[in-house]
Amino acid sequence: MTQLKTLIKNLGPGLLFASMAIGTSHLVLSTKAGAQYGWIMIIPIILANVFKYPFFEFGVRYTNTTDKTLIEGYLNRGKGYLWFYAFITLITTFTILAALYTVTAGLFINLFKISGISISTVALGLFIFISLVLIIGRYKFMEVSLKFVVTILFFALIVTTAMVLFKGQVAHIQDFKAPPIFNDMGILFLISLMGWMPTTVEASSWISLWSIEKWKSEKQKPSLKESLQEFNTGYLMTSVLALFFLIIGSMTLYGTNTQLSGNAVTFADQVVQLFTTHIGPWAYIFIAISAFATMFSTCMTAHDAVARVSLDIIDLLLPKIQVSGKKSIFALAIIILAIVNFIVIALFGANMGQLVALATFVSFVVAPIIGYMNLKNVMSNDVPPAQRPKKALQWLTYLGILFLSFFSIYYFWIVVF
View 1 (cartoon, rainbow, N blue to C red):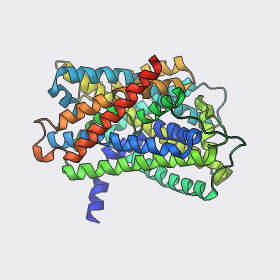
View 2: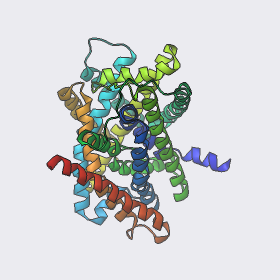
View 3: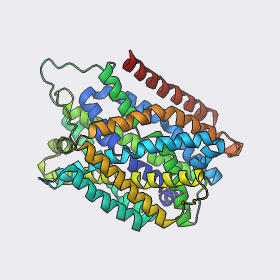
View 4: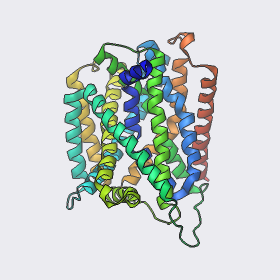
């Protein structure tokens, strides 16, 4: 009982990680994986979660033992490491938030049955509202509010998945043939799925920054064991929920040749209909709100994280400016990110597929490199030998790097040849 109380008290960075991860990778990609390819997609989802685990765990481990962010660790390894991470952050800044806000705007239009208003207009409203929440409420408000959102979502999905399984597999159409996985289209989808499953590897530094922010706000730092327990709880939750979404997609759409739309509004309606078909029309509003809350929380956590990471990078590369820690600078970073990503959404329109594909591809290609950088951090002299990862975790890291590198090389092979 005491351990449970300690875990609940320490909930924060791991919870934010879960809230941020249960977004596009789960609601969009896991559902689509089940709908198009069926139960076989459980394998790449589990592999991605297992092989990427050390990359994220190192963010918690390094920060807890050194009181420094992973980004500071990159600088300690050499400025080249930090410049590389800055380059990756620059690319994701123009893709991740735009993709997330596009999906969320589509769900909002679907939820309130809005007509005559464009995706970009709704996204602008979301950018303004979330920016104000982050600037005024900051970390503490975000943590508290997301505890309710993630808890409700988790139990809602347990019930929905159970009902879907109880009702059974939807009838297949005649002469249905499962689409091949190992062709160009299948490999590209695998890369998208694993690139953002459970989320982008560069988000390992986000957990690092959230940890420090929580310690500052509470003036108390948990032990390494407590921090890892809290993170593992959030990580396990994201992995389980990914399987729930896959099951729902597989049981309700696989074998029907139904194509999930790339248009954000149409896709939102398709996803919500998946749930209500098996529960009943009365549940539509509850499911729509849950789906919207899922993406809204993902937008909020990702927006906060990218702003913090950008300021930390600038602070380390240009120490004379000293931007980190200043509330006014944080507010400015939030606003600039909103403006930049709104422009991207206005240019792409409602076609979120291109945005998600670009964001997931970049994340997938750089994942093994960032994984190696994180390993270098936790195995350096910054971390006492007793608190470095055990041999088994080190080997899992190398396997993860090889696994993701193989798919990256294979992708380039099919593109070139």
